[in-house]
Amino acid sequence: MPHRARARTRRIAAASAAFLAAAAMAVAASPGPAAAAGPPAHTQRVEYFPGPGAEPRQVTVPADTPGRTARPAPAPGGVTPAVRALKRTGPVTGRLDLVVMGDGYTADEQGEFTAAAKEKLDDIFAVEPYRSYRGLFNIWLVDTVSGESGVSGDPTADVVKDSALGARFFCDDVERLLCVDTDKVARYAALAPDADIVFVIANSAKYGGAGYSAGDLPPGSSFHGVATMSSDNDKSYLIGAHELGHSIGHLADEYQYAGYGAYPSADEPAAANLTLLRDPGATKWYRWLGAQDPTGSVVGTYEGGGYYETGIYRPTDTSIMRSLASTDFNVVGREAMIAGFYADADALTSPVPTSRPVGQGRRITVRLAPLTGLADLELTWYVDGRPVPSATGALSMTPHRLGVRGRGHVVTATVTDRTAAVRDPAVRAQTSNSLTWRVR
Image (cartoon, rainbow, N blue to C red; front, side):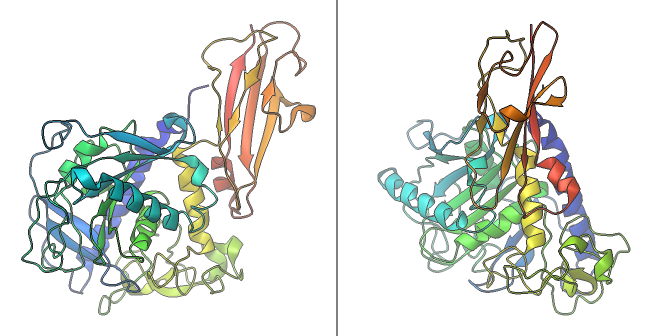
């Protein structure tokens, strides 16, 4: 059967765009500081992090270049940058492909970039549910060679460096805002086999970072978001973990701005972690009410979120989507993240093509993504839609062993994640994927 994950990509991007439009509407309607007139052409709205334990902020900054092209970006000397697989767990058509590139690393410092990338990724993937679902990710490194070591704005605003991606602190006079030239990022990302998410690791010990969502990326970009973070600050990894909450889980920010007042819309937010409904039993997360949460809260309704102080509610007192003082997603966020993982990745793949009929004696081998912890994969085989209990969990079967006799039958392998981190039946259905072969 056709692969389902990539068929969803446009719907995911559309959902991201819808969320961004709603967020922009809300901020524009606010009586607070962001209520200024609409931004001029060639600007980008980015999220930044004033300090390691601070609540994030949103700001509009000038875009670096008005031109939008897809040409590969050559390294100094005209050499096309190397692309390396840091971790490959399956085919690009069945995985979330995370592309990591460095900025401010010279040709002699590419080993330092690799070490920094591994360290940041290990920190991010120590956070649940990334830890359990790391096996749904392929990770690609792109060697972006800079002319000078380090990035602009480090340590002071007057420092200017020749770096491949134009990374700079003091972006729009905000010291901790670490901007990049997203046109250049897009061109480098296009060199990888595929790109769903992009991280930029800046060669710096200074705390800082930024998050760019789909609506602020160059038109035609295949990926859903960009997160920047400094290499040698031990707290900057939380920026990447938070930004993936937006780009993969489509989670809203749970923080609020003083003076923003009441949420300005009567429309229920699309994000899984915000609601206009004060009654806990009526919320999207009613299945989790009263649960003790990894963040230390009890799941309920807590007023304030989506940048507004009143009229909107979040599921827990805090979480990584509210403040980087928290290093955990709440259970509602975890469930949304798992749904997001499966929107772009499949736990079940096979080297045996589904596009061609198989003989009764043909061995059909399937592969399960190497998931751990929260994940609980259940593999079932079917013949003409009827389960074959004796084959449950088998990674290799022939139609004959499944009881097929004669032509025209259909063999299907289906995996479903029975994780206890999912309670919503609609999300449970998203964790399931199937492969089907017709028997000749």
